[in-house]
Length: 424
Image (cartoon, rainbow, N blue to C red; front, top):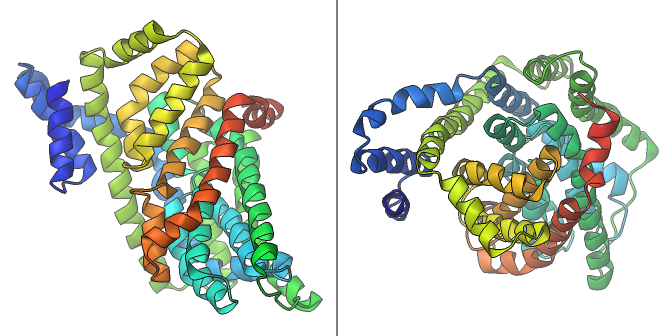
């Protein structure tokens, strides 16, 4: 296995995309270890990795989010959030958190959320007198709600790789998403009072009603998805198709969509989906190499030889995932660690849905964690602030996310209550 990790690290250091680094590393390892006949079958294994009906949900949910985004949904969400909380002191900081929560129920992607909302909210907060570095950090960290609140692309990939119920994972992400939003809202309100951020004029009732009516069709999309899946009306894949049809109908009814914008959304969907599905295909190579070398058994045995205390194992697991999250993006982490994760879940005896929610929250926190938190770099570029200044402002917000992670890991009811009330 030293050869695999050595080749993988060397390719990463040379700037090779992580999917190619994983695939080339796995193939080279099989060749160098004398299993060259197995290496010849790797294309078939890659195809088998993505030959799963449920994976259709990925491009469909991406397309639904892209259609709503190009149809002006982002602007409507911000206006609606401003109608709800914009009149508070430093109201736009609260609007940012609320907008992120609403947008999460549409996009399922943290990077899409940070890019779409950052371009609107960071300049608006700056004009309101909120420090731009803090505004950027708030958008970046709030965006990790994207992969937690359903529909979540990261949870779909986790469900495919682990065999866990995607519908149960979706509904289990609701409470962690609410907790994260509540924590960030409390901090934003405290910071506004401490630093004396200005108060925005309260929006009139007529404007509030108009903003609500224009945004409501988009806001109920996550509810349609969850009710449809949990009520047995349609499968997860069918729910994704319903989301696309719904987005098209709403877009044309509000006259926000045009054939040109639909084509723009389709192109963006194709590019994003190809990247995710390619790395999912490569996951089969990595899983095969790890299984061949019995890596999960070795790791689980090594940890068990150190301690059999499930709490210590849980702590070590979370620390490992957080460290990996500082350098790799979530799907890559899941691909690298899934065989080991499943072995460790058996050791600690955690429910598969709670475990999956904890793992997904863990790896997406890494997207906002230095030194390589991609969300921080996105908002740094949008705000034109040094990334070091954004990181300083983000640290307390990351602490809130870690506190929510600790609660999810230690209190099963937070993730299992809703799946228990609405079983598959």
